[in-house]
Image 1 (cartoon, rainbow, N blue to C red):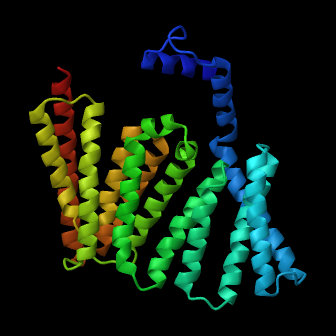
Image 2 (image 1 turned 90 degrees about the vertical axis):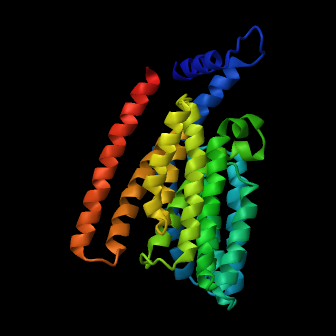
Image 3 (image 1 turned 60 degrees about the vertical axis):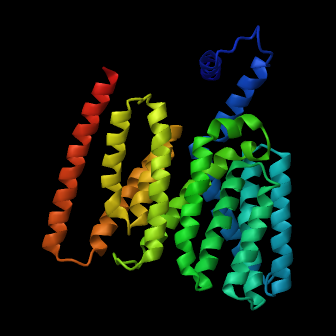
Length: 355
């Protein structure tokens, strides 16, 4: 009865009635049930790990018997596994065949990557080819796990290509671009899903994958980076996320029905004071942005991941500060006191708004 209760609640919130709107209740409830069964988190995790293990075992088997000793064979088998996995994903919804399709997808990209390496291509060229191939493949799959993996491959290889091509500073613009796309997906979620087009069907895996890509990108920005006032690339990246934070705050205030202008201005000023110290630490402002948009869309996974990312980013920020341990301790104490004050102020404002 879970799907029926959810359906009744949805129609009640939308103000629909079966007399005024014609829809197939049984078909909709069946679709809800199928999505719950095929898209549960444990099944997704088992499919991914099962695919990785099966792909690794089969690849080892092929190499052991010398089947994949030359680049042409690797490329041919890679394309065969890739196209075969896409074909199976479109023809069946069985869990076993879905796992086989995921395995074939991973194996196909592995073999294509090995073949491109043997062709003596530059690292960035090979990565860009794989990125384009993964992006094109997204148009032909409908499987949740496969779409998720393809988006991860496309975004990951693009970031790696920027690194290999000595265009590492472009990552400071690439990661905020991911944030901008995610902001659109989270804020316009209802409109996207209601269209029932190519993108809306793949919305959930794309949103989840891009969330992970944003987290990976923000962590990447913290690697081997020190708190330097002349790092203008980090400044531009952090400013982009701060702007996105204020955009998300606007929609959060609407969701919470906060209409008092004085309260809104005060909250904006408090948030600005909170975000200003992150001007050269884009991972912190990026984590706060992810928390805000996840709260806005009621996306619990993104909200929890955002909190974990914030803890990592703050600890990394204080670790990278090139000041004495005593000064770091004082800075942490001041930051803690500020957030405690911010909590009580926000609590008081929320009670005042309710009254």
